[in-house]
Image 1: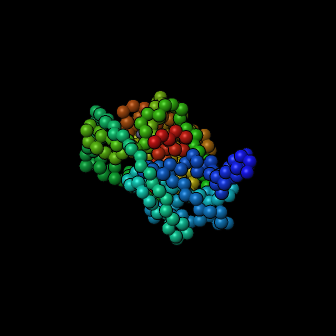
Image 2: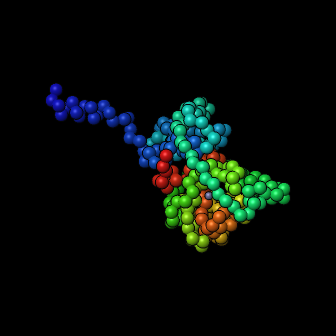
Image 3: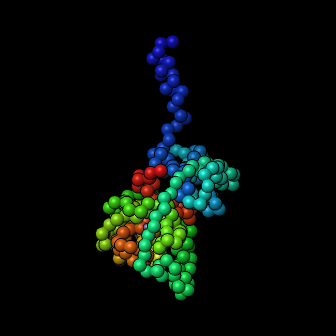
Length: 274
Ligand code: ZN
């Protein structure tokens, strides 16, 4: 057989049944604190997917196959994970990712060891915010590849193990941008404002529901420019960068949540590094 034909045959045989879609290629980072994209086939109706007992985001990729986009908790160990698709189990693999430690010094010791009154407030605020993260609206997100909410260098990455004045606290649940106080914060995708507040740790905060459990939280704002129920267009301003709550200086802290799981926001802006 002429060599060129052999070459062409090899090429045909190595092309997969379909090319991996754009969304899958960019969002599939199956590590603790990352995102798993699970393929679900090309049926007529959207499959119902639940992961860790919670409803998950399902979209049609390239107008063909259905995919589930799952948030993987930071606490998950690498290995096989199961997801429920129309009542049947399906598995996917979680890979390893190492997270660094960070030591922060706070002048206000009350922000490290809150007093009993603070603790009551923190508990109340946590319940309110947890409820916001559990909302699941049926609309499809306007875009899954997000715009950056502010311009400016990334400072603290997601998942850092944090020590405040030497005491270990929860790992960093979002991504920080270094930006000057007063910098406008833009919605990275369209959505609806579902919660605003002025919290002990997070300071002035806005929650935006982008649809199907994909939820953003913006913290430490100097000014909140929206109210609950407001619809937000992609790129619309929702507030300004500040240093309210537990912050050592002005910056934007941005959380992204999928199926009530905080994941690394860098994945959604093409800035993910292992
Ligand atoms: Zn932060």
